[in-house]
Structures are given as structure tokens and as C-alpha cells.
Figure: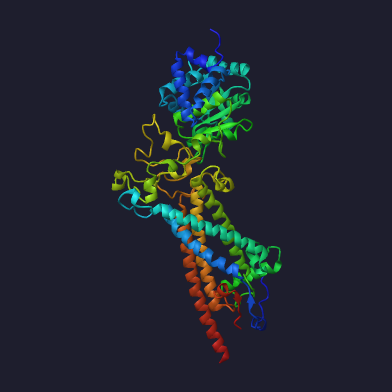
Length: 363
Length: 232
């Protein structure tokens, strides 16, 4: 069997009908927020462009990105994309193992030098020369650097690869480091979330292989099409926020009425992701819809940002002292007031004393 | 380090009144003060909302209004601040005192120390000054100019989140958010700065009133009329 030259050929080989293929193209166009005419463009690109291999590496991570990915709400998209990527290298999904699997990496470099996409799930730990994550007898960071040297672009899957996530939480004993701080010379697309939404992942990947370019990125390297708004901006409970109707406790009347979860710590107002529009599990639900606040898992360093259950959170800058802005600030303002009162009292006393001494001098 | 205390004769020499605070400075002062009061009240309630109101969401707009007032007051604060900086360049020499600290002048440090001693009751009279004494100028520079800038930058960065990517606020101030480690962190620093400015306002008001009662110069009336008068 000849090596397939285009994605379309790969899909057909995997038994996907042309009808399903076209459905997938229109679905992806809609998911990316592109107009209907883009369905045809995506189809055309996948039919004609040479196939871009995708190498999927795993560093320090929990595989929740992969778990999310393979549970794409639209099985069609999942199947299609899986058939696209499982072809090359993904140590969770591929059939090959051991030396055979590792050999595939070198083969890809040989055949597609500078042309493949490197999808990174998890991050490399740098302490102890990277010994906290060993793959095929070598530190993961070496494998990452080696593969990054020959790739075209990098996708940083999830909060681990994008920001560091839980393994990089204070005090970060293994010095787990996000991809963009290790690989400095390649374009990187961050797709944060713990995990990212499946449709967001397939959307970003399809965009990159269909159009052969990076999606438009924001200041922090996230695709604008999915990360340009806060959950809060599109939250269906937003009217309750604007009205001033809040859940005060998880079992109160407000919770039953579906009021805003801001006061019980929802981080929707500070979290950039597509949960409130795309939702999870094929649009079934998402945290706020199920009655729990957003944890802010797509945000940088969200583990060290203080309580998940309070709107005013820990500062996290005072060397590990857990105290909120309101507590420290309140104490400072209170101290200022007390200091002022004490100084005023002392001023009166000193003034009276001076008057006395002046009087006695006059006498 | 301690400077020679000013002799009684020198301290009690009658001086003419000086026109210190020009009209734009005085107007700015009171507009700024009012905007700070409104910003603190609404800002605190945005971080710590009032108990919920019942009924349909469509009947109320509590948080919406609080945020609207906060944003309007924020504009007043920022525009006033910009006008004040401009006046610092074109106004009289006293109006420039908010823009810089004359750390290269030995006399400034000497009088700063003198002021500290005065407020610690270790010295009977404060060193003479016309507009801001060195201690007041240092406080103004830190808590008014620097903190004000910090509040404006963090404030408009947060405001840009509502206006959206590519908005003018995002273009000018959006970079603050990743720099400070994310949206939630910017919020908390912004909130903490509110408490710093409250602490400053308490001390500032106290010092002004105290100077009026105990000092040799007018203080509160100066920021109303612009004239610094001398008692002796």
C-alpha cells in the first residue's frame, strides 16, 4: 500500500465516507467560527495539500488532554482527527511500542524535516537535569528539544504545556516548565485548559493542517477564536451577576434558582476559554451549568491563585503567606487610622505640655 | 545628620501670603478626592457584592450600575490625573512638586529628616516650606503619582477585558494582564491598591487638619483658596 499523500486519502483508507468527510469539514468550519464557504476550502485543502504529520509527545502530565480529545463530542470529528494523527506518533494512542515506536520519531524527522507539527501534552521538568521524567532512557526535555528542532510549529496542549499547571504549583519541586520557556525558536500555539475542550483541540489542529498556518493568536499565544473572551462574557448566568443576584451558599435559595456563582468563587470573570459557548461533552454541560463555579483552569498558575471558593483570593506574593488583598489592605488602613488617632492624641499632649512650659517660663 | 534647628526669630518672621495652588490644581484636588471616594465605595462592592436581591434578574441592575459608576469615576480619576500631570508642566513651580522628588538636593533630605523629627515630637517646629514639605512631597509622589498611575494602568487593563480584544483599552493597557500573572492577580493588586489609597487618604486628611491647627501655616484653606497664609 503506498503511503497516503493527503489527509483525505488517509481518511478514506480508514473507512470514512466522503459524506462523513464533508460533514466533518462543515462542522470544523462552524467550530472555528468561519463562514459556510470555508467548509469547501477546508475540504479542498485536506484533499489536495500534502499530509502534515503530527507528532504528539507526552511530558509531565495526567493525559487528561488526550482523554478529552478522544471524547470529542462529535464522534465524527474524533474519528477523523484520530485517523489523521495516530498515523505518526502518539505514545498513548499508537499501536507500536518500545524501540519500534521511538524509531518512528527518527523516521519522521528524516522524511518530514521542518514540516511536521509537534503537539506537546505536559511539560518537561528541568531540575536534576530533567531526571523527573524519563522516556526511552532519556530525560523528556532532551526528546522535546530534539523533536522541536525539526518541527514546523508546536501546539502546547493544556495548562501543563501552556503554563505549568499543578506540577509547577508552588514550590514546583521538579521545576516543571511550560513549553514556551524551553523552546524559544519555534512558533507555539497555546491551548490551555485542564483539559482543553475537545472541540477546541480538534478545531485548532484542523485549522493548522488545513490552512498550513497558525490561527490568529492573542498576546499570550492563545488562538483568538477560542480564547478571546472570558467565560463571564458569554455566561448564561450573567444577567444574575448584573442584577446583583448571587449564590451565597451552595444549598441556598439562590443556588436553586441558578443565580450567579461569583460570590462562591466562580473564576468565570477572570478566565479565558470557550466553556460557556462550546460547553463540554458535546454541549451537554459545563461547570457553571452544573452549579459549581469555574476554577479558572485555563489561566496561568491557577493552582496558586488562592481559594476556588472565594471571589477575593489570596495574594500569593507574600512568600507563601495566605492572605487576601482585603485582609492585608484592611489591616493597613486600620493601622493608618489607629496611628493617626494616636498621633493626634500625642500632638494634643505635647501641645499642652509646651503651653505649660511656656506659661511657667513667662512666670 | 540633624540640621541646626531654625532660630525662633527666623521662624516667627512674618511672611506675606503666597499663591501656591492655582485654580486647576484646586479643582483637580477636589474632583480627584470625590472620584476616589466613589471608586473605593463601588470598587469594594464589586469585589464583595451586597446580599442578593430577589425577584427576576430583569428587574434589577445592581452590579451593572455599580460597575458603570465605577467606570465613570475611573474615567474622571484618569482624565483628571492626566490634566494634573499636564498642569505640572505648565503651571507654577509648586504644581511641579507632584512630578518628581528632588533627591539630588541636600537641603531636601535635611528638611525631610527635620519633618520626620517634627512629627516624632523630637523637634518643636517643622522646617519652613511653601507648598509641600519634603515628607508631604515624598508621600504625594508615592501614593498619589505612582499609586495613581498603577491604579489607572491596572484599572484600564481590567476595563479592557469587557471592551474586548483589539479595543483601545486592550491596545494600550491589555499588556498589563499577562505581565502581572493573569486577570485574577490584576484584580487583587487593584483591590489592594484601593486599601493603600484609603490609608493614604486617612493620613493625608489628618496631617492637613493638624497642620492647620498646630502649624504656622494655613493648610486646609489653602487648597480651597489657593493662598498660603502665615500665622506669625
